[in-house]
Length: 227
Image (cartoon, rainbow, N blue to C red; front, top):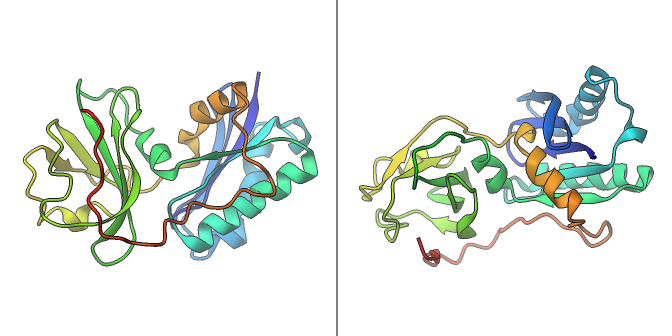
């Protein structure tokens, strides 16, 4: 059994969700400017109140730990750490792009997912996941988008996220289509991964845990695993 509070603060959308055994119980979000610092605590209070749950009943805190906004990630992790210290419960950190990919269900067989978060100009944080299993095909990395980026992909692929559409007009791959759905990751899609991590005790060290900023852009071609 697990009751886990999830925080997602890596983009302009700030969201919080509560899951019991990986199943969504309640969630809340805001796109308010500066909402991460102003509203995160209130969102936490809201989802707990809606579910008639107190903080002392929580088994763990999960936080989307990057890549993404420097300020947003820092606020999310600091809040998660504070709760974990105060409640004496474990911390779970999840990859932001995996959270974004989790939103897609019931895809056609052999479809790949290419979530992209905007990193300004023609730069994005990107990864590739199998659409069914959500297993990683291309590891998360910073990418400078060029017409031939991800040219090794040879399966139908959906590019999405708030960084994808700026590549739409220059992408030369016949395999990649673009969607404006799921522009931002949401805490409601963290439940299953958080529960799996809890059951297998894949916890992050409270003191040493740091956001995965991925600030340095090297301009290298992403390495694609066997498709």
